[in-house]
Length: 119
Image (cartoon, rainbow, N blue to C red; front, side):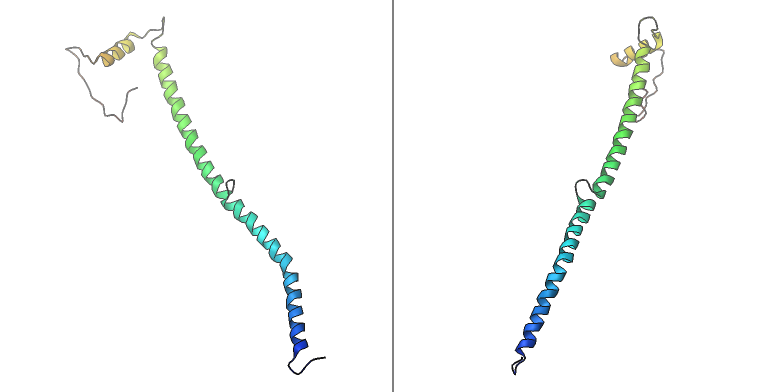
């Protein structure tokens, strides 16, 4: 029964609207939760962007490690030449002259730039 202003039709519309809202609430909540997890899977501390940054950091660390290992090997070769029975007199003389900043009168000095270190 409706009154002359359509009151029951308005009540029916409100009920339908409320039913539709309740029916849409669960899917909207599900999409919000999924969106939350997707956002953090990409932008979070352990997300895809952070993973890419870690991969770059690991590559930089490996190159630094390789450089340090090469420097260590060069130093070990030089130290090997200064050990007891295997003493390399030329290498010892070269190192002593460099540390004392001395040169013989009949020797020629060839300066190198800082980027071209001999050892």
